[in-house]
Length: 221
Length: 226
Image (cartoon, rainbow over all chains, first blue to last red; front, side, top):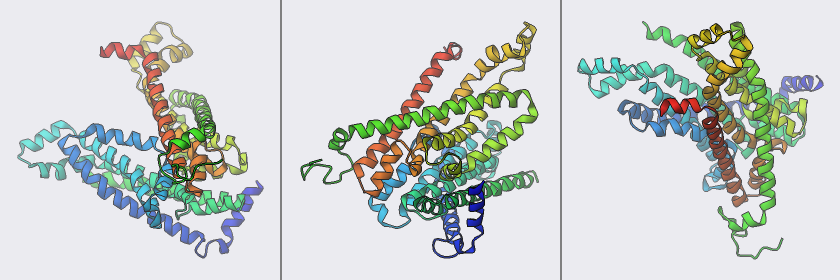
């Protein structure tokens, strides 16, 4: 119980929120890393998945890449990248690792979503004379949207987790508060940092949950 | 240790046979710890997840809360999870195991529940008609039929646990993660690469092992296909 009070005192101490090691700065870093990498990952994964799903090719690759991503430890990739020349670019290893781990769920979900579109609907659209491009944009992509967004949500959660682990390998973000706490042997700071990270992750999840609830209403109009 | 100045260790190369032969004991210890952490946490996870899934299946109202709690646990990043458990377990292997158990719960409960729900109602009624009680129905009909889905969950949970165990390096109990962490601080490329590759090898081997076990304990799925 004492640790919890101490962690609470750590969190309510305004000195811990200001400055370069402060919570606000780390929170900003975490948010920027997550958002920027989510955008980059979407730009990489979604076009590939939509085209592959539309053509019905490369399914084994798109589905298995998720399993491979799960087997490779995030921490190992971060450290490996840190020791390569990429390690010299500051946040370089973090960004590359974040993107690497966000791409698989995006790719798999979007591909599966595209393939699960009712084949009768696709045939009907073709029968109406839709071109491949019209079919992709007006029929398949909108119908696959819930699955695609599910992938974006998984990727976002993965990004928040990876950005936290990045702190172990010298990256910025809220994880740094935890690693600094370990270095100082300050359990209250470790717990306070962990609470911040957990709340941040749950907020990200909640934002997507809310977005998903709002979306179907737009679709049925 | 007296290394000649011009071997791959001195040149800090990524791939180094010398490293494998000189640090064999360290590597074997780390692999041993890694296996202990993952096997223990997956087994404990299974022991907790199975009753949870059965309860959630039997009493429908329990399914919502059980799934919600395990999903929340899964959303918490691993580093934060281990850190939150620090006041409870201190710097110990138990902390890492507890964290990994909490992660495996989501995957296991979800998959076992999906497997139990997928048992056809006809099958269940037929068993009841033959005079099966609820316990016998569960043990001899429902659970075996849920095996393929449950094993799929077990495989994902195991592979994830192997990978996440490396983060345990933050408290000094990360198996191969310890070597990666130490290698990072000393820029020891061969150590980082070797430990990383071993992690992936363990994950793939565990996955194949479970696939083999599934093949052995679910002969009826093969008969249908053949």
